[in-house]
Length: 111
Image (cartoon, rainbow, N blue to C red; front, side, top):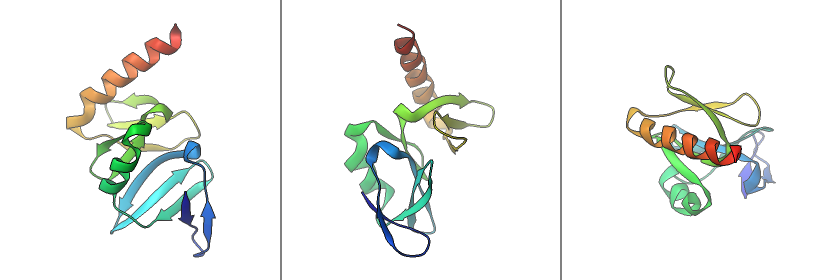
């Protein structure tokens, strides 16, 4: 995937390295353990493109790779990722979905 770095130059990153997408002031950001990059599209477009690859919308400002989620903090309403110290928010309406996913995902990994 081609993204833009902070200095405006372009960079190709692998889909496997993506932790999550977020939006701020009509810009889309791609987050990896190496940093944050700009991606020129909408989160709705990204969800359509990546839903089949395990990405879901957990809040109105993100589309998350569920396979990279490690834990859910119900008090703060955030998910933590297996790689690095990054986290992102979960809306109240998506709380049951992330809890279901993690209970299924964690029980499968124990088998």
